[in-house]
Image 1: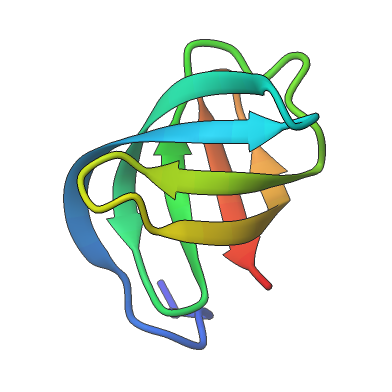
Image 2: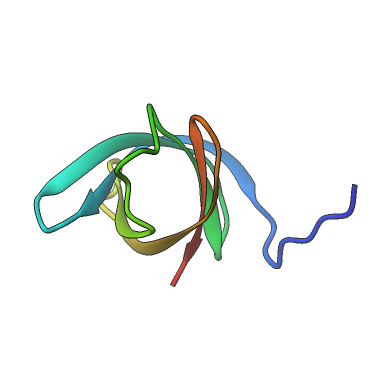
Length: 80
C-alpha cells in the first residue's frame, strides 16, 4: 500500500474533546497524530460539525480541525 500522507503519523492514545458552538463538547480519543492531522475514535460521529476545535486533555493544546473522512466510530481530521 502506498502512503499518501504528507506528514508521518505517530501512534498515540490521548483523551481529547471536540469543541464547537462555544459550549458543546464531545469526548474522543486521539489514535494517531501528525503535524497535519489526526485520527480520532468517537462514540458516534452524528452531530459533529465538519469543522471544530480539538482540545487535547493532557496539555490543553488546541487544533482547529476539519473532517476529511469518517466511519462508524472514527474521524480523520486535517489541521488548519
